[in-house]
Image 1 (cartoon, rainbow, N blue to C red):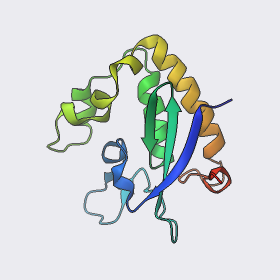
Image 2: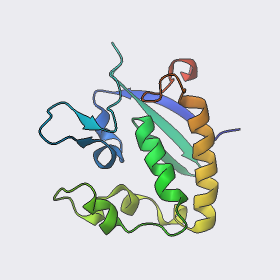
Image 3: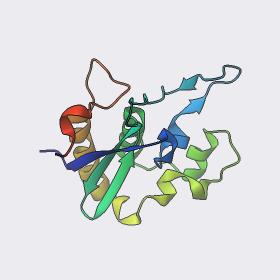
Image 4: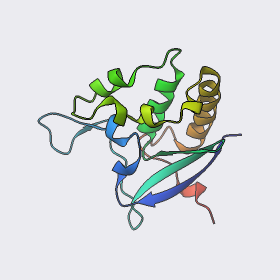
Length: 143
């Protein structure tokens, strides 16, 4: 059973903590992004996935952010935020990186392992192979 999760909608995809770090603009190609942007849903906006893990709520606005979160937290030794920030090639320092903002209680190796298992289970439910760049939010809306 995956962790408890739900969807909400917002006017823009950039509000999720990982958005700035995952979706990188392609040089000399306006409106082109490495890690495709999530689609805007007509009359709703952008789907935000909220995953509840213990007392924490993690928020993602695209499957690419979910995968990046899993990739980083799956590493035996966490990469430094200095290294991760340098990959963005922007003036935002390591203290503003999503990993530095993640609660310390979620960064221990044992807790990360549990968190990655929980997030992978959610990923299996909300990301389909047919449309891997958007969430399958329709069947998970709260009534």
